[in-house]
Image 1: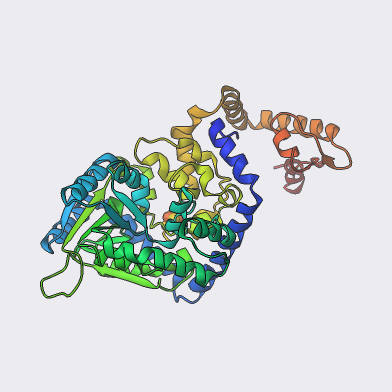
Image 2: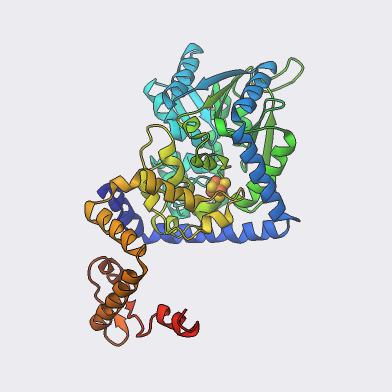
Length: 467
Ligand code: SF4
């Protein structure tokens, strides 16, 4: 199957040709997977909890309108403001005008994939407002002028030497590859930002409908700084992130950290309900929750709505052979990997259907997904719905012929025998080193075994007495 666009093909080639990237990815994803297996092995009834987590997500998405209304009412009852953003543009405009109306010149951000999705940094910078990422991975990416390449670890493709050079250049850090010295340099650079910023922007892992509580899951203290030190806190939340109750949030938290980083819980799990109350010593004076739709609601009630169960743990990226070979940037989307290939065309302007071809459909993503999303099925649906139109005419004709022949068993058997005999004639000593047609791509990098004389079909017929 060919990847439709030349731009995508070229990004894939670039990723596959980057040995440093692949080494960094393999080292990081392998370590995540080992920790994840251990964390789930230590969890009693892990499979039952995964089933429960899926049931919670499925129930919530089926009743999303009801839980979102309840969540918004509770946020407002506790003194927060809720803005419903139908599009990325509406979300950005609201935040930019809020910052302008308060005379803000700098905002501090903690990690938020939705902010990447809506292009918030760009919108703020165009409005003359400085944006500083305070999550260490995002901070590194911002200094490098790049985009995140993983949902959980945005700088997964960077080696320690790369980061050291960035910090030497941008922070004036003396040459070192020692991690404690590098993190100390980042901390020094960010400390004043937390104190000076008038607006803190965060993402939201879950919004609990029964109390309007925001749940933030982080491994760095920056999330708490961003949401408590500046006088205004803006929380960006995809509408699918709502959960009905605290009990539901607790179940999802059990699988989120284990799937993401192999931890039972992350270092910081924060629960924020409303802005600062009169009797409280700290916290923001204003809380604005921006609920971002940006295309999500289009898919409710369709088979694609299952993609909205995603809790953005990133585990499907870590196990995907395609992601590991090409890296996150090759997808050209904010959301890379298997779930990115499903979700990207569902959001915003709906571009990116060709990502459905960046998969071998091996099913490893579905096996590891804590909420058991049938990612391969959803990818095939994309191929059926949209991406098929992107294929070249010869490939569409080939697929049509394949489907036509596969429905005619006699013809199929005869064609199979002919193809096997043809390939045997081309082969030497049991191997085909130079293929023809679609086999060329295979034999360009590895040999193809010559088919055996007796086919499985013949063997099966002889075993079952001609049945
Ligand atoms: S699809 Fe599943 S495994 Fe992938 S990020 Fe979402 S929840 Fe995690």
